Image (cartoon, rainbow, N blue to C red; front, side):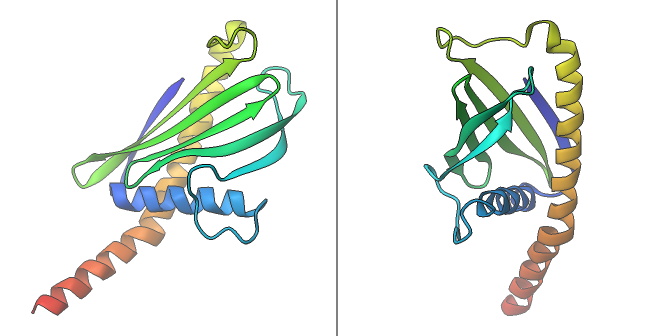
Length: 159
């Protein structure tokens, strides 16, 4: 499944906000963690998407490519989910493209959500919209001001 959210903030600001939020999430489980990098992983109990049963899950950072890509995998006895955040530059603003691909342990094949698809898609879109709006706000409030400050400093330095 995929969702695209049109951001007001720049690609750089959105990427910084995304990485800050992901780092804070991982720091709940690894308190001394200073920077995210591929292969950093945590273990926790999560609910499955369909049955809501608790399952032990390992969440691992798979790929980081500044300023546009963050990928993580959630692996459990039921299979794994690949979550991809792609920050696409669109002029002075950006788009956050979030995708989620689920693979089951049964044959390793990609599995659809079956009868739950319309209901899950609505829930998925709603959660993505909220997440996009939140990241855009963080990017605009915290990181866009930093970009402006750095630009102002560069202008003063050149004068």
